Amino acid sequence: MVKAKQHNPWFWIPCLCAAEEIPSAVVIYVALLMFLQFGASETMAAVYGGLLFLPFLLKSFLYLGARKAAHIKWRICAVELLVFFSLMWTAIYLSDSVVEEWVLFLHLFALSLLCSWHELYSRLYYHSMLQPREQHIFRSTKMAASLVALMLTYGLLIIVAGFFEVFFRSYQKAWAMESSLVAGVFLLFCVLNAVVLHAPHHPLKLALHHPQYDYHIFDRIRKTPNIMRVLVILFLLLLPQSLLFQVRVFFLMAPVEQGGLGCSLQDVGFAQGTVGVLAFSVGLIVGRYLTLVHGRRRLFWPTSFALTLSPFLYMLMALYPQPDNLFLICCMAFLAQLLFGFGLNACGAFIAHVSGERYASIVNYIYVPMVAALMLPPMMLSGCLVTELGYSDYFTLSALLAPLALTALAVGRVKDILFAKEL
Image (cartoon, rainbow, N blue to C red):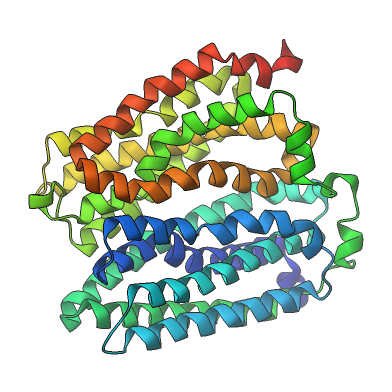
C-alpha cells in the first residue's frame, strides 16, 4: 500500500510542484523587495530582477540535452539539496554586518540557476513517469498544485518577512531569518521527494524518444510563416504588462512623497503577493476554461484587450493615490492581476502558431523563452524610466501603449495569420 501511494501521481505531483514554487518565489518576487531594502535604486533593482529571469529563459534551449540525462530522480534530489544550501548560504551572508547589493544579486542568481534546472528536471520526470494520456488526466492536478503553491508562497513570504522586521527591528535580520525559514521548509520537501519519487518506469531517453519531444525551438521559430510580424506584434501586446511587471512592486513600496503608496512589507505581501496572485490564478483558469469551451479564435480579441487594461488601473492609483486605504489598494491589485491572468491566454494563439500541431506537448518549452525574451528588455528598462518620469507619467505612458498594441493587432491582421487554418 505504501509503495502504491508513493507512486500515486495525486501524491508526488503536488510535492514536486511545491518544491518548484517555494524557491522560485524568492528569485522572481521576493528578490525585488530585498534589493530595494538593501539600498539598490529602482533602476538597478529592475536590472537585477530582470537578470534573475535569464536562467528560466535559457533552460528551455537546454531541454534536448537535459532529456538524455540518466538517474533523473537523483538529479532532482541533488538539485534540491543544492537549493537548500544556496538558501542557507544566502541567510548566512545576510547575517553579516555589511550586505552589498551586487553580492546579494550573485547569491540570488545562483539560486535562480538551480531553480531553473530543478524546474527542467521536474518536467522531464513528469513526462517520463506519465504517458501522454495520463498527462492529460493529471494536467489540471499539476496546474492546481502550482497555483496553490503560488498563492501560499508569494504573499506568505513577504508577510512573514514583515513580521520579522517588526520583531527584530532590523530588515537585515528579518531577511536572514526569512531565508533560514524558507531553507528549513524546503528541506522538508527535499526529504519528502527523496521518499515519494521513484526511478522512471523506463530510461528517460527512451520514455521521451518520440517525435513530439524532438523539438528544436530555433529551427521551428525560423521556419514559422510571418514570424517577424507575429513576434513584433506579440512584443507590442506584452509591452504594457512588461513595463508594469516590476514597477507595480516599486510603486507600493515607494514613500508617499515620491509618488508611491508607502506600503509596509505586510501590506505588499497581502495586496500583491496574496490577493494579486489569487486574482491572477482566477483569471488564468477562467481564461483557459473559456478558451477550451469557445476556442482560441473567438477568445482572441477579449483576451488581447484584457492584457492591455492593467496599466489604466495603476494610472488611476498614481493620479488619485489612497495610501491609507489598504482595501482599495487590494481591490485595484485584484482587478489588475485578474485582467493580466485572463489576458495572458491570448499568448496561447501565438505559441500554437509557432509550435503547430504539437502545441500541447511542448508549450512549456517554447512559451517561456518566447514570452520572457520579449518581456525582459522592457522589464529591465522600467526602473530607469520610472526614475526619470515619476509614477504618474510612467503609468500614463504604459496605458497609452495599450491602444498602440491593439491597433497593431488589427492593422497587422495577426488574427488571420494565427488562425489561417480555420478560415
